[in-house]
Length: 402
Ligand code: AMP
Image (cartoon, helix red, strand yellow):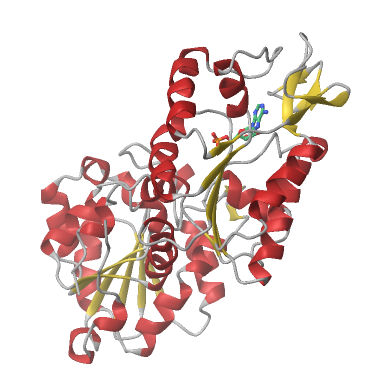
């Protein structure tokens, strides 16, 4: 798969100046008591917005927030995002528009260098259904389309895919461009040695990514709870650790396929107690992978594994990481994840390209304060996973090719 799509830099001045840019952004930010508590996703699209303001474009921003399921619900309003956006762009006129009818009118009235933020697009049923009539209505509100919502690019919705069928040019914003530039390095003609680190709770969500990465990487390091399903596949007992019983056969098959590639932890941190609802554990100790006690619950990779993984990683030219090494939400069992994050920062300094998948791995790298010390932290959990699986993302393949 090769994405060779146009970005806003490939548009001519005639195509943008005084024209209406319909931009799909990902402003799906956490909100508490009517306030945005983390504006990273808003800031991530500011360079695209600023570039188009510079080019005297009229801007219409479309985003979703949460899962209102096609119904208007004040809990999921983008109003708090509007307040935040005004703070980030204090010199720009920004209007908040709530209905598609109003949007059609207002998009014909705004001046160059002004912005409309449209209310949560998922208040409309047609969005998630990718209703083409709805997509056409959206397309009427712009003269060209920009997709900058990487986190939603794996979904074929009206504002991420349908609209781009009717509104041309349809190009990528800077955020999507950067995501593609980096993530492509991980799947087409990757540099070697190329090492993938896969962790997290379950194999089930990561089968396709493991299968695809086995084809292109030199080594695949496994951490997180999924290691226990692999141990079981090898015949070891894993105490009370999280195991997907119905995936043991599959784990056997993956081990067979990745015979010289899959590297499993050699030790782990166990507790005799763990309550995932309140994230509380009992006494912790480190044990070898072949002597997990009957009442032991594995919660992190052990120190010998951290050293082993570092050795494997030391000469890597390219590393992709998806999924934490343990229950990183609790400081005592975050060590494996944090130590690997720190080591990735170290090898990045030596010239290795380090790519962090979104979701929990991105949170972990932020928790360690290392988001600027690795090559790329993806803004999309599901989208980056599907990209690494080798799937085509509908919100990206629909964009104009170079
Ligand atoms: P995933 O969404 O599959 O990437 O899984 C992320 C979750 O896996 C995080 O919430 C971690 O707390 C959890 N996790 C990682 N290691 C373990 C483990 N050994 N036991 C239980 N949960 C784990």
